[in-house]
Image 1: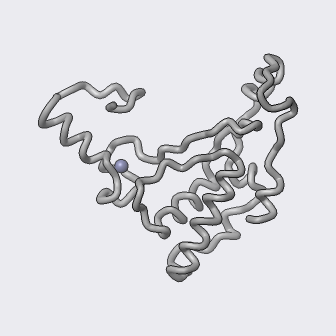
Image 2: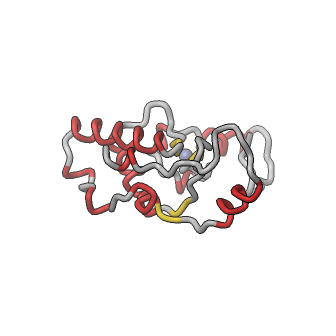
Length: 149
Ligand SMILES: [Zn+2]
C-alpha cells in the first residue's frame, strides 16, 4: 500500500490552471476499478475475519491514507468501527470509478439513504432517521437522484 501511494497519477497541467482539451481528455477516459488505480489486487487483503482488532485498525487507517493520496474521500459515519471501514474499502477495490488528477476530491457516500440496503451497521448511520422523518413528519416523494437534504 505504501508503494501505491507513490504511484498517484499526476496532473499533466500545473495546479490552478485550466486546459479544456485536457479536461475533455480526462472526462473521456473510462472508469477503472480502484484496484487498477492503486495497482493493488483484492487478493492482497485478507478478509476481515482473519485480522485482529489491531490489524484492522492499522489497515483501515492505511487504506484511508491511500485513498487520501488519490483524493478519494470516504464519507463514513463518525464512529464507524475499523472492521467495517476496512471491509468497505476492501470491497471498493472492485468499484469502478474515475480518478481526477490534480487534487480533485472524489467523495464516496456508500449509503443511498435506504436503510434496508445500508452498507453501514445501521446504528452508525443517519439514513434511518431520514426515513423516519419522511414518514412521520413530512411525507415526500423521494427523488432517486437527490439526497433528502
Ligand atoms: Zn445508511
